[in-house]
Structure formats: structure tokens, C-alpha cells
Length: 177
Image (cartoon, rainbow, N blue to C red; front, side, top):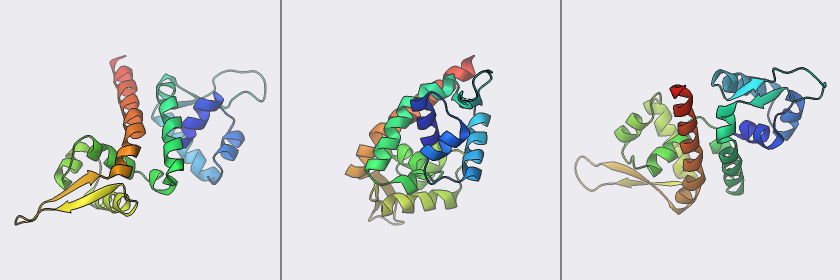
């Protein structure tokens, strides 16, 4: 998300420039992130020739479709000091699923293809520790556990849902081509 935000804001970047904008990222981490974004069709190496300072990496139309939402999400995460949790693979997606109505463990598993029970549990613990969700254990037997966004979680859900919706639309448009 921060990589896409920088590429969108700067209209493309060289590797070294991108590395300096991302502060604490290592060269290896940025290389892996760019490889993943290229594989996902969000970023491409600049195919043109020209000036040696031309951007080395640019966004594809899919990347451009989510760029503005990435900027807003990075801003929201930074303001709330949630960068560490936001950089993990699952917590923000779990928060999105809860915000969209999934409340129970099995509903979250269904809403998030590819997540393991262990990853889901870890993401729920992270979100709860940050005060973004609350865990509600019912009085019935066997007890049923539900999860809901807190007020802080609701405020983060707004830009998060915009980002996820933009990504879903861009992905659907790409699939329809």
C-alpha cells in the first residue's frame, strides 16, 4: 500500500528514490514487494527509453485505479499510528470483512479465501490489541463469539473500504477485458 501510494503521488519512481520515500524498508523487502506488485499487475518496469532519471517503476491502469485510495489509507494508518499492524498480511482484510458484516470465525474464514485459522486468530488478536475490534462472547452454551468494529475501527474502515472497493472494481474490470 505505501509503495503504490508513493508511485501514484510521484507518477513513478526509480528504485533508490522509492527506497528513500519508504524510510525503513530494506532493499530486499522493497525488491520483493515490487516483484509481488508486478506479478499482481499493479506495477510495471517503465518500458520506455530516454533520460537516465526517468521513472524505473510506474503503475499500470490497475495501480492507477487504487492509487488515490492508497494515499488516503496510508494517511489514515499513519495518523492512528497503526503502521506496524497495517503492514501485516491479514489484519486490514479481516477488519474489512468485519466492517462488511462478517461477525463470527466461520464467516470470516468464508469471507477471506486463503486465510488459515491460525492467521485469522493472530489478526483478530492484533486488531483487538489495537482497539479496532471488540470480542463479544455470548451467554448461550456453547458460547458464540462475535467480533465488531469499535469506534476507532469504524473510522479506519471508511478509507479501508474505499481502497478495497477500488481494488475490487479494478480487478473486475481487468478480468472483463
